[in-house]
Each structure stands twice: as structure tokens, then as C-alpha cells.
Amino acid sequence: MTIGDIINQLSPDSFSIEPDRDIEIKDVYVSDLLSDVMANAGEGSLWITLQTHINIVAVASMKNMPAVILVNGRKPEGETVQKAASEGIALFGTDMHAFELAGRLYNMLHG
Amino acid sequence: MDHTRKIDGRFNLVGGDFTNAGEASTQLKKILQLRGVKDSYIRRASIATFEAEMNVIIYTPAGILRYDVDDESIKITVEDMGPGIEDIDLAMQEGYSTAPEWVREMGWGAGMGLPNMKKNSDVFRIDSAPGEGTTVKMIIYLNKGEQS
Image (cartoon, rainbow over all chains, first blue to last red; front, top):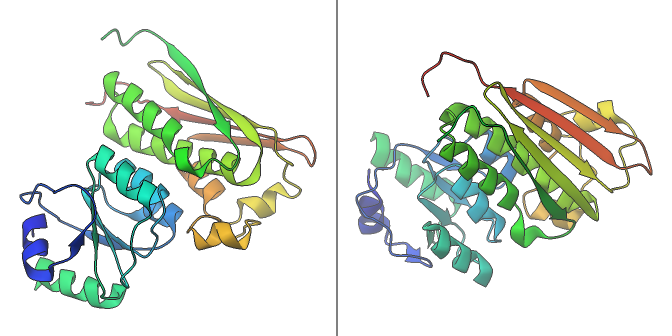
């Protein structure tokens, strides 16, 4: 599953940089606790969260994540968008809630 | 790159400065990468440092993070001017937190910070007393002879 596949199949809103569509996503992590993400998310995962503040970028960057998807129609804060752009991390958003989005991505990855 | 050279440095941490949270961790990661330290050690140091930064930012007015790297180890010391910890054993318990509600809403303060720091270091020492601030010392040993 590539970032391009996700864009094509889920049509998320894009808030940050235009991501490299060829980036391969091998794992997805769902959590709203930032220490949990730091401790347990795989390197290079895609991250599903409802947190919208600037710290999600530093956490994503630390885990070498290419993209974060915000759920429940949440929009990132302005400084989050700026920092994501400067760190080269794509920020997406969707009206889906975490379970539905995770299910769709799970099927794309393992279905 | 001269790998036998010792490097050290410090970062000043400002309480409440969530905007720059993770900056010390990011800088240290770059320094370790330039030095050619193996990724698995860099990951551990990054997590330990980020969590230490968060504790200073959430609970204290200010602190200093010092790092010391040589061929043997990465040493990280974080000294803060915070209120200190009353019961260290309790603070070390996974899930225990004294963070205020608004910090928890940000997804911090889940009681994972100190345990994450301990898990990611080979030596972990915490000295604290109420009214005297907190000092955390962490060492990550870099095993020799492994491929980097």
C-alpha cells in the first residue's frame, strides 16, 4: 500500500505538503496517547489520531512517519501545518472515525 | 568523522513551551546520526530524551538536558527546577500521572513518560525531593563490535 493508494481510495483532505505518492506504508498505528506512539508505533508507520496540536509532528518525525491522518473531521492547528510542512510530513484528514479508517486501511494492507 | 572523539552539549528546556517539545530529541538524533551510531541506539536515545523533555515542559518552569557521547555510551542528564517528586516509586508506575486535565487532553500525561525513559536506557537513575527539583540520569551502552 502506498500513500498514492490511500489518496486514491480514501480521498482524504490534505493539509500539509504534497506527499510522495510512491512511499510504501507497511504498518498503521492508531493512538491518541503520544507516549504510546513513541513507545509502540513501528518506524515509518502511518499514524491515525484525533490529536491536532503541534507535538504530533515531532512524534511523527521521531518515528520517521511519512504521514498522519486526523479523524472525526478534525483540522490541524496552524502551527501544526507549518511544522509538518517544514518536516516533510504529510497531514491528512477524514470525516471517518478511527475504527472505520483503520478498518479500511487494514483491508488495503492485508485484504 | 572521528568516532573516537567525545562529544557533549546541552539544551535549555523551558517549562510550558510545548511548541518546541521534541527539539532537543531531534537535535540529539541528528548528532548521533552524523556520528554513525546504530539506529536502534538512536531510537532508544530519542524516546528517552523526548520523554525527559516533556516532563520538564509539563511539570517544571525550566530545566537543562546534557548529553555526553563517546564510543562506549550515550549519557543523558536532565536537571530541572520543578517541584520535585514526592513518591518516586509511585511516579515510576506505568499509568500513574499527576498531569492536569488539559495536558491529558493533548495525549500527554498518560503515566508512560518515566517508564518509557527507564525501558529505553541501560542505566536509569532519578533523584528528587519535594521542593528540590528532579535530576534524571540515563545511560545507553553502545555495544562494540556490532554493525552500525
